[in-house]
Length: 253
View (tube, rainbow, N blue to C red):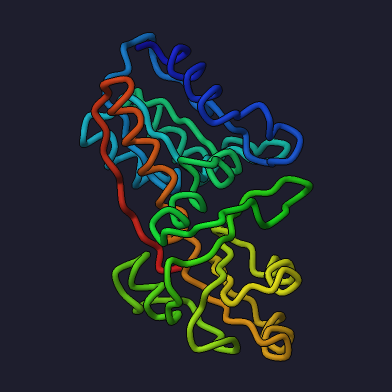
């Protein structure tokens, strides 16, 4: 499969063009490779020199990431930015990014994957961002403590950025928005959720959550955004027969 063919497949699968007006990420092909067959795809959360080097060591033709190198209005190719791009060019690896399309996707998205792992029923879109709903909310199969939720999703309660235990001892109704969405807790409060789960923490919401009586889990930006790229890797293997690998570079944040 050529790069442009894979691009057409991913643009359709993830509905990338639907997010052109709402996403600052330059979703899609960010760096081309030579006109070769794409047979091996590495996936990672972040595009960086180290992820590119590890992908190259594995023999990847393309690196698919959630956080690419190009955002907003563009940036001069100097300094760290130049050295990162050079890593891709020197190893002839293409770079492909999918930001909001991979948060919001109803099957492969970060939030949908976590909702599926928790077995949420009565699932509904939740968490509006710039007019687009990117998260999911629903009801747990049985009430769970916040620790049990963390264990189910991450296999541990260690390394959470924080937990605000201001709601019920056991959670029934859960809302999830991956990454940097602490202030979307307002929507969780308005809809009467027991637990709101996101990546980044924020001091400024502490007292509001305390007074509203809601549990809030700050699970880490990185850890809440490994789900989508891994799901895409699985789909590329199943549907296109591509070899895939996950380049895991946790930040602890």
